[in-house]
Length: 261
Image (spheres, rainbow, N blue to C red):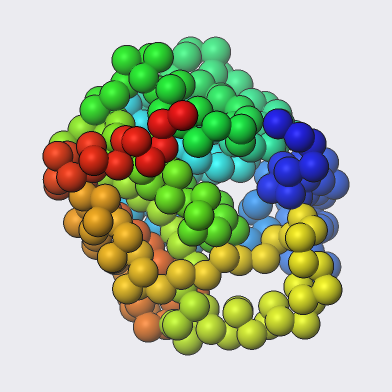
């Protein structure tokens, strides 16, 4: 993969330049990790309970994570289940952070870091099939990462999930919502800073809507549930907290040619 890939460039630079005082309005402790500046223990626990534990995470065994960052939710799932997690990331530098944080889980072979090359659309599917994980995944998840990925690339991950999850397996993601109160405000706040940065690596969001998510995932064989971790609701929250259950494997199989090279 070219090192000019904007996603790799953005998140390599972020991980390499990160420090506990990256945000002047919020100084973190020295034992913090990249990404901690955007949340707190209460928020992370609410998301994990609502999107993972409430959907049976304690019984999961085979999982895939896209964009684990420093491994926050990877670690939570490790502590609350017997899962094996393949953690895909496009950023080698961010992956090194996760390897440091989860070194014991990696040594025990419970976490398997895997680099996304972004050259072939079926690279993740091939990786999982080579490990005999087709139709064996309990969950395919990504928290706080896919808000930065546009729908064209997201659909590759959607289809990969649809082709590797077991029946009634779960795809769990946070996605940016353009039409909610906080989402629309975030969209407007990005107009001035991001307009002159077109085509360059940035942290800008890629926005969707509940209808788009429902329709696209429904066509792929999923039944979509918008969860509510904070009690505020889909019309208020910046993000969509999506738990999508694979209910139509026959339909999902019709999209194999769309991803296979």
